[in-house]
Length: 430
Image (cartoon, rainbow, N blue to C red; front, side, top):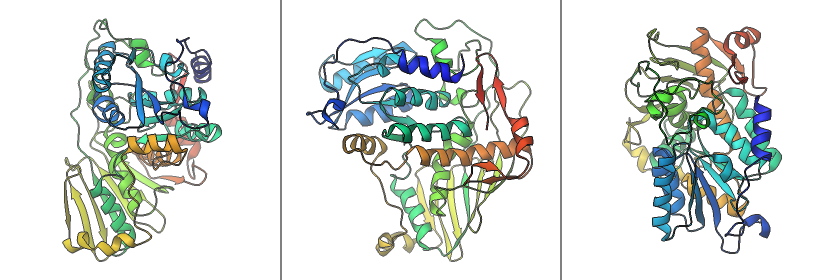
């Protein structure tokens, strides 16, 4: 079925569920008398459990009442964690995410699936009246815009799961760059880790506890292979992800754009290159890439995985600041810049939000804004997808962030870069 049919069937034809044991907050115009937000967690891999589930379990105003994964053993393990935390057996484990979305007693869902499910699952949940927290990024340019419009239409709370603006070191880097502490910033460089290239695998039997059809969802129909459930593997296929550029890039490139004041806008010229992939490789996402983003009247941002290490560095007319390794060591041309408390009073200094799980729950309760809202995540993902397109086009591409359109060679780019997911009539493209 096509995208619209899938969304309609999923949102309007959700499976029947038993009567709720916790009164939903919608009955009380905001939150339930217990001041708790009921949450269903979907996708229970490492990020879904160690970060998101763990974060919600520690919030006094959140109550995880259901967990779901198409690999049932993961769902059952997460249920055990939830039950042990609350000292009861109330949490329900599901294999089909639509059963969670169909429950009337659930206020919000937390989505920690592979990338190709982020937006479709969010749209289904929003249409069903849920507030949504989902991991980054989008899979395509167009679906990010669609998501932002649906969030606006329904007036729901939405948050992308990106923690960087809360991390002190990245918050400081972005804030200092905005204040002019190192002069006028003219260049930013983001070094991303170069990932192992996975070889092709022969198909194998689907494990008894895996619903392979649900895992694929909107992706093309293919045979199951043993390692595909490993996040380091599925992230190297364009059918499921954008590789390290949209994974690690979503972290460091957000700080880069914040630092030059372009987090709500985007680049206008992008050019890049990458290393040719082996013909027998499973990998379809770019590897060995080097991408330059140009912003009118602003600093240029260079993003590459050829550095083989993680870092972000801002260079200005009066010095430089950087963070080496992930959330690692801060260094600068003049270390005193990190001790200048007066800079934090500068109106251009980037405000530091709470951790993303806490911010989301508080926003659901208070119906307030979130830092990584649908529009912010779409703008960030757009930057990263444009890098992919520039690498594939092998020439400079020109983009208008205001109209979200190519200003040159638009038809040529669309015809060469859009392709149909023929097995399920699901379009991926611009």
